[in-house]
Length: 257
Image (cartoon, rainbow, N blue to C red; front, side, top):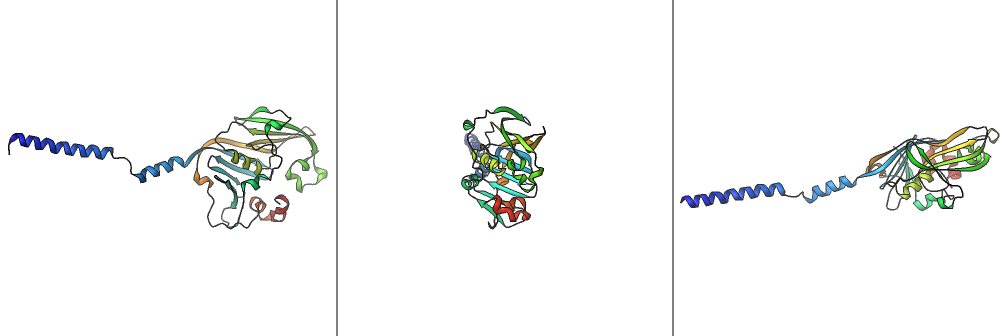
């Protein structure tokens, strides 16, 4: 074999080997790995996590573009997510559950209005560093007439509520309007469908009583798993029974007709 031919052959082999190495380095991800990475990216959403209290106890609320989840201290869980925002409520470890359409759930709060329709001017107020809007209304009623919690208390022992103060979060763009509506309706907050932060009762004796309050509020990354509904549930229960427990079954029709 001539030297010139040997050199040409050697260079050809080296060129082939190098091209194969380069191609191996530049091979794009397979469709499977690309899809997996896309799903990982899409399964994380900017959202909020809040701990709130009312006369009924402590609640943990998570909300983002993928849905809303409200969990009570007695392990009842309310979940809704797009596209139809059907509202589900269940208890951990139980097969009985309840569900209701988004449109029907909104009828719990028939007094919801737009801010522009209010004669009371909202003022800015910050709660835990969150920008909010405060509205104060004259009430002059017994406590049991202004809160559902007074339903089981003696009217004679109820103080007079002079004013009622509401604070709603503003500028929370990562929570869609449907989730805000479910949030406010779940806690039966009247006025309009925004994220409720505080309800303070101004009593006749000068006391200010927090009827609804926010203890923690933070922005967080949430996943689709936070808003999943367990499979195999039997939707034969009523909402009040799921929220407040078996002991409330007798008044379920009264609170949720």
